[in-house]
Length: 166
Image (cartoon, rainbow, N blue to C red; front, side, top):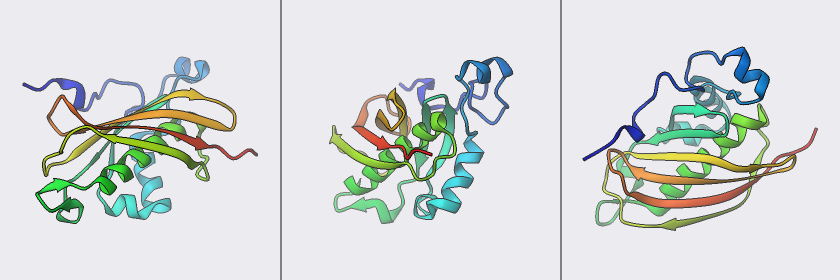
């Protein structure tokens, strides 16, 4: 049995629809739309774009990304490799940071830890990231990875991003 947790929510703030003036005034609107973030990845982080990482949803401090399970990402035994999952988690946290910080493309990972919870099958992955705490120079967040269509996570990551000033 699956739920709608991994399905796109076209009525949610941060989708391709413009944010309302009220949300923007409250500082709760996403700075990027999913299409904006995908274009940023294509131009500024082309390896993520070539890997097929795409933005499904973007909100204020949250992002949901997907990544196909191509042959390049599989390890012996037909499971998605740890490095591929780590890369997806890192890009997801980057998106969540930028959804709050704005166009600060020089924000960088300063620390990230991932726990692999179970063996993911050879199918697309979904990453759900959220910012736990956003400061002026550091952002701390978490990312949960799922195999598409499954409820139980395959990995969980936490990380800190350094946000350059000025």
